[in-house]
Length: 320
Ligand SMILES: C[S@@+](CC[C@H](N)C(=O)[O-])C[C@H]1O[C@@H](n2cnc3c(N)ncnc32)[C@H](O)[C@@H]1O
Image 1: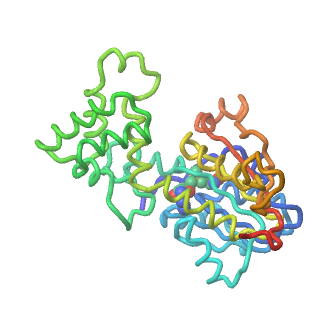
Image 2: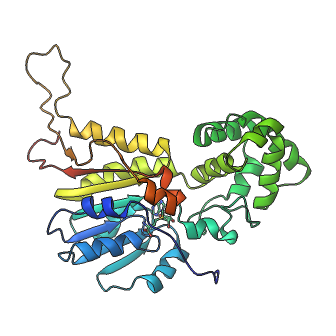
Image 3: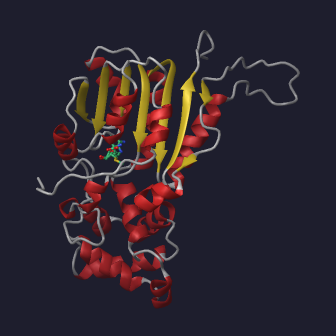
């Protein structure tokens, strides 16, 4: 374990506090607990909370969080957020009043060279949030077909030089397999056209590292799985609040919330509804909420954060 002092500045805290729980809600789930910054703020604002289920894939950060946030109401679980039904069953809980997801990785994980997320800090090319499970980023860059690497860089990183970078990686790994972050950052940087490198406002390896992190941790598949599960686990009137940092994540969240806020799905030409479908969610945020200038100045990571929240409606006998 690193001896570095754990640090993460939580984003959009005011909005999280506003939406995370209904008034007098009792059970709160923080599905991306991290160092517990959001939970601390939510607990301070909702004295009605009797229990917090804190979930994180990362055992190390959960252990650290015991030092940064001690509270007897909190039960911590190393798991995926989408494991929530099993966790609730273990806790003998049937439903919850608020669920929060603050996606991606924390600053502490990013800054911790040993975890391999950073292109500026030499370390093992790992990038797993749960570092006891699954292939590492090194496994992916050393083993995936060139076309698959190209797809990952293009789709998850929106990297326009995906093909060139994948070609360079394949050439390089045939000589020496990748084991470290700096090796990969160097190969990616050298694969970029010199003019793009010079003009870029961000480190040339930013998009490739982001794309690999999403692929290593199956982040999009996990959100898709989680959304339906969250809806099923919420009590009527319960709130679902999600902060995403990537347009692909936000698109999934937005589409899910919009789909479930709609009722009838009959074609417009039908004079009366025959599907009987009723809305399951009410949107609490019309448009996504972004950080203001003060927050982004103080915490540049907040620049890409967007928050959406919704409330679960009574299902009655409408579930089909
Ligand atoms: C941005 S940080 C959360 C910070 C936290 N909200 C705070 O204010 O301190 C995201 C955390 O969620 C974890 N994580 C990301 N996706 C997850 C998932 N699907 N299930 C469980 N944990 C996840 C990461 O390991 C990381 O610790």
